Image (cartoon, rainbow, N blue to C red; front, side, top):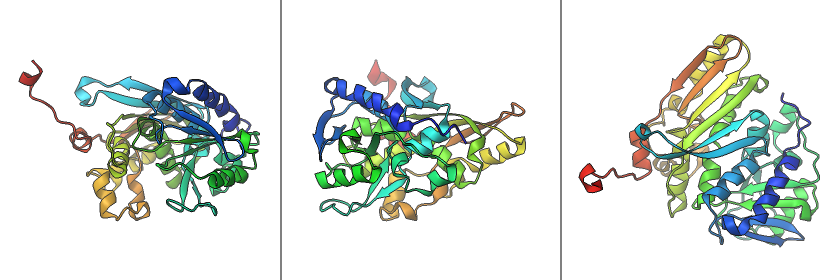
Length: 333
């Protein structure tokens, strides 16, 4: 296991403070509620921004990863994308970024009953078996949470979230990133590496053998409705995402991991995610779990230096999912 002494909340907090200091520039809303909980609105009442989403994605990684917005090659058909790198990929992605805590507030009176919580604050709560399995606990006196929600949480819900972390309310930050906003799109697509590592865990490959992790995916255009926006964010990863992992151990096991890892191993692969989601009645748990992975992976065996690539990117399907219309050359003249 990676060094458990690093604190994802302690590393994330200065990034939160920088976000607050430049809230106006980043088009964010900042308030103190529920006894002092710091609430950062990145797309509900405030507009949010791509740069805010990039910074929020690095906060979600517990300050252990780098997220950049980069241009794509012309032949790739989509001009811009997101790149993620983490030298402590398991800690950054699974113990901080992953939306692994299904929080059901007893005080919630409006909206959906459950909230999927991500961010470093999960390592304070530790209600997921993953933390015991990996032997990780964060004792930092602060906690940072992310909520993908289109509704402003009630004060009672914020207070319950702070209480669950065992942290004073004034030392808790909650960042709100609806998927229909630019910040929400960025921070979701920036989970391309995390999605890969989650499937690595489901495949029972030893996480302590993951040495390095890098990922990239196209940045999709926004959409005004939640299902379309969510579909495009997922398509960016499932149809257009790429991940490179360096792994220790026998070469044949690296090869087997590459074979099993891509989203293309799922029979459901090959259609826009929004279509699949609607057919499943909006139930994530009815979907094939093998689908949730990058479209293409490269796994390098550090013992021998050989690399194994599997999966593929479907650019025509991405263009369809992103509603991209290629205009005739004469119109651009």
